[in-house]
Length: 548
Image (cartoon, rainbow, N blue to C red; front, side):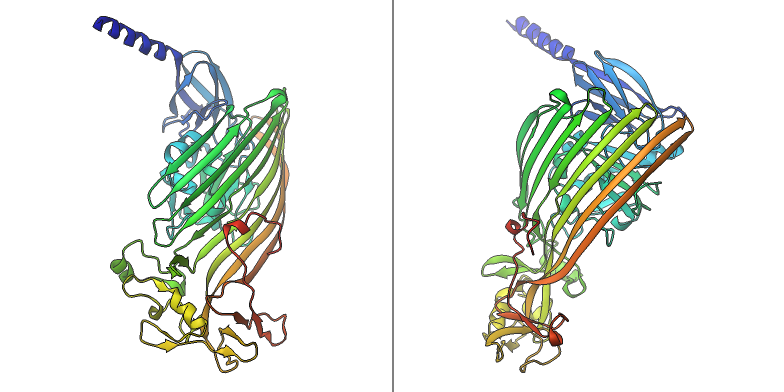
């Protein structure tokens, strides 16, 4: 019996090993003959992929025969069929464009003597490492990149590439720029769910010859999504972590259907309490991808709609709301200077809320072996902003120690509410204050000015929201003609229309009945009492076309 068991185990193991196909090899530059480190080797139609090592070597295991897609930023991709274990050498030719197998790649220029300046992370790499990290943090293993959570709240990641911040780094999704058109910054919370649908992240470190009108002194980051090369199937997954972290993902891919059509759908929710005190967050992500390619593989069309509405409390370091080293020594590293409680619930003066859906249509046309036309049309609307305190109560900002419980350092918002609403309130420094009724309106009005109105000035604190909304439309077209091995011509244009919508509105009156606005010059004398507040809740972010 024991001999039979041993024989049966060996038989099963042999059968399993026989079904696995192992392909090894080296990816080299066709002109220099050197290995290309970081080149992508992917089993076509799957997320099974690897990157080459420093010498350009790789090893990949597949379930049976298939096709390898070999790509590297700045080179023409190749597809190699295999039906058994084998060792291969793939020689890639330099392209004027980044020759990866997905549409919308960035126009990277490449110095062949410094191929190490480019790195590609595959979907498999990202899924293996992501956990409850944010997408930019995946790049920390890339030379020259430093990514951090900044204040520690959800979506507040920051990326520096070769010492440059996002204002000097071009960040794109499928070749479409997502840097803020006004200040060049990238708000990663707007793209919190992309890790679930990304097929690759490409990074070029250092200055590149981009054909896009964006600053890329530090380098370029291109996040690539794809629908037509995904296997048919779906998934439902749930992830839990520390501090109430919970993420649920549901997705389905049709795979390539008859006629070259494919569809990919995904919906996810992420929520938690946050590691830093008072940084509760909740966000959703949706993705719809439609792809079509003709039987001759000359035309490739991709339609993508994605968005990630979210709200999260923050820990900021603004001038008037900055904790000192002694505060962290006393209250711990999770201490949040902006955090407190209101009616027993978490209340943070700093809250970010935003929804920025992006819709794009990408078309690629291989006219012949030496001529290629690509075009993108995209539209994005952004709605939301961030909150903060405005006003001074008895002349003091909300950052004053008089409003903070010395036991835990948290803001006692209940005391501020009591004072704003006319109740005599004793603060932690022993001072007593209360708002008074405005005789003109009969209401408790916060007057945040040195001008005395009806006998009061600097008499309260409210929470305002600074809105940073926009409408963004653009198109990128490029025609490439390879004249010979040494000369390639490119012609195209990058055109955009952008409208920014910036204003402030009341978010929470904190017990007061209104706020006296001295800054609105549309009204005579600039003295206007505002009593209407506008919600910054997650539910109000879904409709990006309503008037806010």
